[in-house]
Length: 123
Image 1 (cartoon, one colour):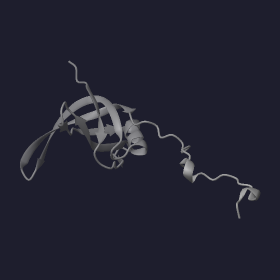
Image 2: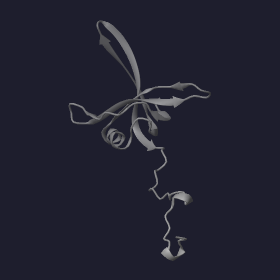
Image 3: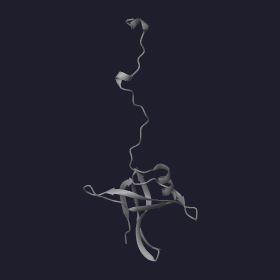
Image 4: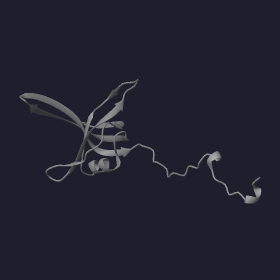
């Protein structure tokens, strides 16, 4: 059987890196994944270990990423009501944001400063 998920989207919230009781890094978030047209899905994603550490260090709300992982379904009970949850457990992470280049932009030509010889001044 195959349980494989690949998603490409943007993180919808600021990430909070947590530690499990066993000392493993963990992060949970929602990923905005576009469909054809103007609709989107918002799957819940969870990452552990090094993947969680990378997400917590290099990603924030709005970061464009792709993840590879698997689906996990579990149930929880609150106030006597059982709920079924499905989430993606990310195993691999790919950063899709373009690298921000060093600020090498120059001021517009009319704002640039030039060396001028005082002899060239009309006054």
